Amino acid sequence: MRWHSAKGGDVAIDCPGQEILERTSAVISDRMVEARLTAGLPAAGRTILASAAQRMFLETLPQLVERALMYRSVDSQTMHALAASVEDQEYLRSQLKLLSLVAFIGNGAVLPRVSGVSNMPLETNTVVRFRAPPELQVMVELPNQGTVVGMGIRQGVTLICGGGFNGKSTLLQAIERGVYNHAPGDGRELVVTDATATKIKAEEGRFVCSTDIRPFINNLPLGKTTDAFSTADASGSTSMAASIQEAVEVEASTLLFDEDTCATNFLVRDGRMQQLVSQDCEPITPLVSRVRELWEAKGVSSIMVIGGCGDYLDVADTVVSMHGYVPSDATEKAKAIAQCMPVVIEIPQIKYGPALNRTIIVPKELAAHKPPKAKTRWSIALFPSDKLSSLAPPTISDAGAATHERTDEPEVFPELDLTALDQLVSVSQTRAIASMLQLATQNTRRRTMRSLVSDMCTTALGDLPAGHGVAGNLARPRGIE
Image 1: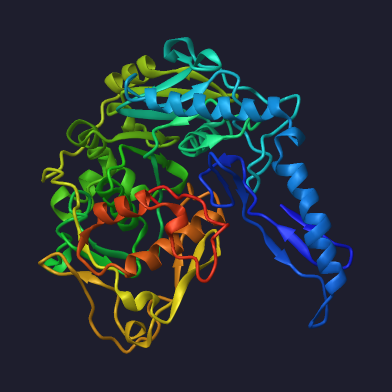
Image 2: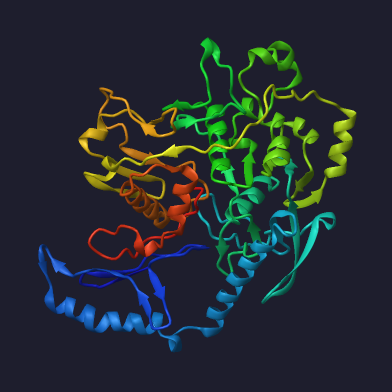
């Protein structure tokens, strides 16, 4: 949000979006309400216009405070409705596990957005509001709104099926954003998801560091092992294997997949390919062979948009069919089809094994020259010292600590690419991640990845490094991101 003067100068505050996040732009205590603003002084060339600056500070700023921060100036009914809505969403999310659910989509929800680049609700006379199929209806009593009815997605393996352009991906996108609370009027106020739900997608070219991907990729040619796999250029299937393992490492209990953004050879290996290439010659164990084990042995549920991989009917607990943006329960029909048209799903040659528990050190050289800086929502620029610039990507030793090897390639870590993190919703979260990286370099003790993430999640946003001032443009990211 920004105010401009006709003669230059502006006053701005970090602007929230549809998701309600913990932010540093406003701080409320029993004694005060503090808004953290930035001010650009009016100027002519390199000369500050003193009179205009005086008016900005002594006239304009007090007016902005009066209009935005004083209780008498705000719509109290709207403010209380916002607080009640957030309280209801938090309560509903807290009830999911007790109800053996991983997500809840309330009747009447507006799931479509204006466009692929807008997070605003689609508001037309033809928009189809969500309505739960009777077989999957769940009723929940909320503290403020009272009884609400919607579709409960149960723990286990859930498929979202249907023809193209019928709302499958739209439903999944609403579920993936349901890890956050939403402002009243967004349309997704009653779309609530397990807070640890993580979107998994193919990310060709991503960096992978010392990750045990044996549950999915093993026995590579020439005897190469994958118990501590590292690469600077992962394939689609390898990236998905690593992403699943990383999510499980930091205790994600729900995984989200959309067939459109997954590597096909990672999802399934049909009967014909099993005949052509024997299991002994195929390093990849497809997800269809592991998804039930993820749930039954690890307690990790999966929600999957599936349009072409029918083998998943054999491993699903629940099947939701979308037609004309309207869901129906197709579980029994799917089971009948699976019985009539059996397929062979290969049994993995090894058990899934324990979750990752890597021990790492974030090198202090990462921020020795200049602190990491968020360039956009999707990227963080790194300014390492010359020492770190001449080092190879870190690996994890047999003892579990990150180490480096020398290389002739300069500036190995110029930028962190976050474009695959679909659930990162604000550049303010990216700024916080950059500050957390800087904070992590100040503690050189060995920590597990799980411990490091926990430490960052419990650190107050106001305690993160903020240069010479107070950071007013940070928002809390999830530990997963």
